Length: 330
Image (tube, rainbow, N blue to C red; front, side, top):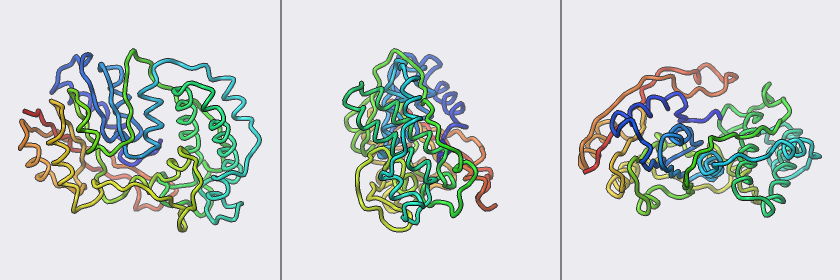
């Protein structure tokens, strides 16, 4: 998925840095990804460690990680995917509220794709009590990613485009969200990280909180809506639901929340991904972490997140610096 803050390009750097600090053999370690997003970093560590714990405040993240991290055996899905792709269109919640043909004045999906999303999502709701939990999340994660590929947005759902872009004109094709099978008992949560941290423990804690004031609940609201698939009255031009807001997006609260998290963490090694444009400065992070043990810093230059190429030049990629703060907690 095209995702703000994705660590896809940096995952190798993160794994290498963790191994340098903790040791090359991580097979007996418990790894926690407290702000997991799409789970890219956890997916990299899954075959490396004994157990993965993931968490995120957003429900779409929970769905993705229930599939990618918690699932550990393959499913027989081919025939079901074929039938799901052939369902008759349905004018359901997505079409009625996020497609232009319904009169909603919103164009997050083409009319055809909106109705197909509704048809598949309603069928998954019927299947849920009849199939195992892991298979349900595999199917729902597959729908989220397949729908995202034909969304008429500039990568985030804070707004839709006035005209259907080329990828949004393509017919939605449900594709499997395939995962790595490992002999693990992993745990996936959908909680406030500062509350969850009091009830979990392990060796390696990886932190990738929001960097700025943009709330993920607003930027990716439609993925949450598709995941929950519950009736509500969408608000405003963009069709927002009520959504959870993170203190890590609030300049007056972020530092206090971060220090509380570090203090409560029952992990020996803590790694924080943050970039040079975040609400917390490098010096603030360093000062906070040094209060709790041995601190060091690694840096990596990379190309920043780039929104869809149909956007204006001001959104084109440029170089930025990723900071990986390390704390060995005493």
